[in-house]
Amino acid sequence: MAVVRMLIAAALVVCPAAARAAKPPNVLLIISDDQGWTDFGFMGHPVVQTPHLDRLASQSVVFPNGYVTVPLCRPSLASIMTGQYGFRTGIYCNNPPDGVPRTKTHHLIQQVPTLPRLLGKAGYRSFQTGKFWEGKHENAGFTHGMTGEGDRHGSRKGLQIGRDGLQPIYDFIEESGDTPWLVWYAPFMPHAPHNPPERLLKKYTAEGRSPRLAAYWAMCEWLDETCGELLGYLERRGLAENTLVVFIVDNGWIQETGPVRQSVGWFTPKSKLSPYDGGLRTPVIIRWPGRVAPQKREELVSSIDLAPTILRACGVEPPPEMTGVDLLQVIAGKHDIRNRPVFGEVYVHTEVAVGEPAKSLVHRVVRQGEWKLILPYDTSKPAELYHITEDPTEERNLAKEHPDRVAELTQLLDRWWNPRE
Image (cartoon, rainbow, N blue to C red; front, side):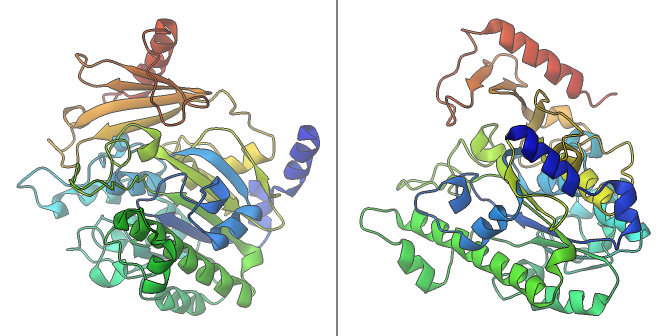
């Protein structure tokens, strides 16, 4: 059966040459904000309901073993746009060093190839909504957007996308006419403030359940509702068939529920800003009707894979700086990544020195197959090795029992993370 599914997928995937010959697809990139990788119906959560994303997953290729490069908003979003790691682009922390204006770092996104910039050269219009961080939307090559030069992580109006409806996106699509488009839908959801509609909050409120957890879970469903509205609009407008839909989360979240806050943002130490799967792991969804057959894939994939995948689907060859994998070729059985490692880098929230990533680095991470190594940059601290399939919450450090595995994965990390190359 596996061989049959591979042949079917191969038959349904359009090669880059064919994509150029056909009408270029529109692209809808949905990026959830601060959501745990388990917190979806299609990922098996016993309480959180996400019927619209569940339906999308049923129509799509789902990679449940996806990873972002950094468990922090700004550098994670930048890696999605650029298809590169933070130590390559220089975007690896949320904030510049104390005393350095944010505008002094906007040249970083201006000087590297980005998904909207490359699609723009191919005739696409593009619209940035929600989280962005890089100043005005033109800095990353978007033709249209909701963020201005002085905004920290999106303008106030832009960050209300989804919470206050989706009309700006609908207007952009209508104005695009027959011109192909890219929509960057990165709503401030389920990100705090966790202030869902009362009807959803009541649904998740239960005796003995933390009010904070109920509010967070309700936010997850509210995000799902907005995704359903957007996908429903595409169907009503007859655009769904020629729209490539990609879904990912920018970084993880595990809601803190205790009486005393343990972090700056009420998330647990093993989620956002951490090297654990609670901070780095995300499902990745790809829907392209008539081109890829719905299926579940167990291969490890990375957020740096999205830009080259989307570009090739649109008939654009990615530049060599984008070292990620074309996931459509993986789906088609033309690229075997079963033994491929995926990498992560974990930094402090506020950069120590511009252009010197090692000074802000806390951990390097690699997962290959069932094994994951977390290597502190401070060599006085112990390495952590986990067998992810048997220990998905990373409770049992097996580094002492498997020194050869630690050495092997350390070599992979050293070959990968070298900002001086």
